[in-house]
Length: 403
Image 1 (cartoon, rainbow, N blue to C red):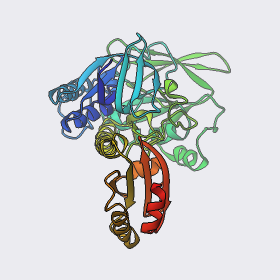
Image 2: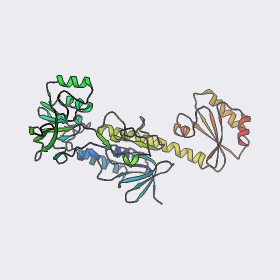
Image 3: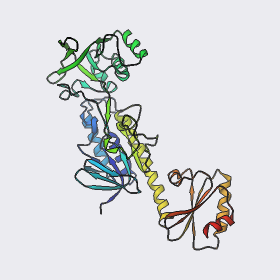
Image 4: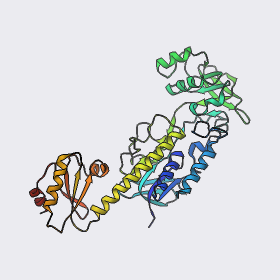
């Protein structure tokens, strides 16, 4: 039988590696499964100047190597694998790699990442990180007083183009539409047209990016005349959307219409014990620093979840006699009096045991058993719920429940 990990992380980008660091440091048996080398998109970014504390000659690969070493220092296993199947429904989650290897875990962090939508233009992939970029926030300052080209004309593209004008000398937007027509909202369009640093090439598409070691120029085709013109530039920014790598998660966790994983502020998905971090989840800002923060939150939340579930398993599910489980809260007076009624009812009964759980501290289990009132008393036999009392109850009602 395969080893059961406390925490399995699917994806070795900054979010996944941060989850590994925090998981292992919490003494959880933790592994990160990555189909390529650890680091994700950040490992393909040569210059990295906006991660706090790393600003002088920092590189994406260098920072991600530190993330990996940090995780391994605390005991995280880095495993090579491409997860293609899974069963997340039970207390023990099962992940299956493409080569058939099965992995088992009590909690899972999903960190599959996302990738910029590529137009597969000649030169785009070869010059990525060498003048070709997909993130103005990440790379704008590298183009101070230089000329750049923007591909895309939706809300995000125009917003990012305006941001670039704070650094670049000239920003040229290549637009497929007729003159004056943009896909962004009207207010953004009006603001863009008034910006003296923004220039537009209408009825056109990008045909090729040219350069040896760095971007030198682009070739642009007019879709009306098919005329090709060359435009010297130092950089090309693509803002045509991103694609989350979540196809393998469909039907397993909740995704939004664009395929991003839906989580709450604790990085919890709609499946108990399953978390999601980084660029693949619904979020406002997709950066290395926010992915790392996601990973820290998810691992801490998972550690609390595992502690909660372990206590529940030992006290209730694996008990060798019937268990009366009381969900209570110290600030609810009725639940405090319920403790007295419960203890009085079983004072002379050695064939049953009592377990108490603070509803607030054990929200996962309370939710799992649809506990809506405080107090609520559940009766378990052989690990299964067989009865309950909701709200204020008496000693006589407890005795009747046990019959």
